[in-house]
Image (cartoon, rainbow, N blue to C red; front, side, top):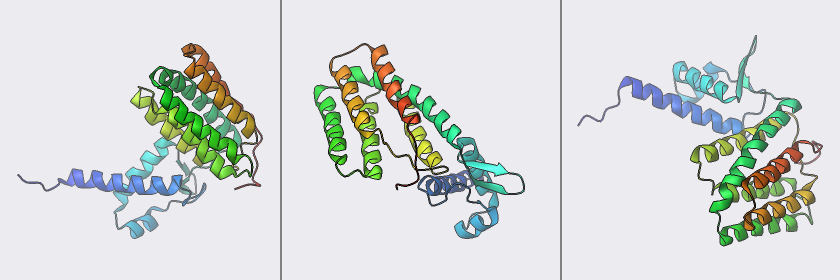
Length: 223
């Protein structure tokens, strides 16, 4: 059997390589908001022609992490505080639904595992490290979301969390100054799950928890 790739397959694989490379650099902060993505420079660096690079940039523009600005060209998207807040409110609704959907599928041991993460968040309050706390916060929520039976929703949550983290780099780093309240709200959500509360109530509380985050002040004084 001839395993040689067709020209179309080669082109698609190069475009996929460029897409994954640029996306990872954007989302890990290597390319900061406003960074210009110059096709010729990227072609020289990667050794890939401009065609797959342009295709990758179109995909990234569709993802919302790249924008094309007149007289500037393609650059890493820059967001304002209002856009961050709007995205967070949308995410709150998705998270509320996902938490309610996951609840009936969680065992006592799995709920306990989520409690352990929340306990570590409580311990982290003593000498508050915003980066560590934020990492634990993500770990806590995904310890619940992974039990949601809707794979598409899980994938969407993963993508939106990553995008939101990137969006925040455009304005300021979010510091969960409501950290103690956040930990208490986590415990409340787990109590509802353990008590087999109605899905509508779990969804309401989880959504309100995420929405409250958008109302908390932001600062650039912390990492």
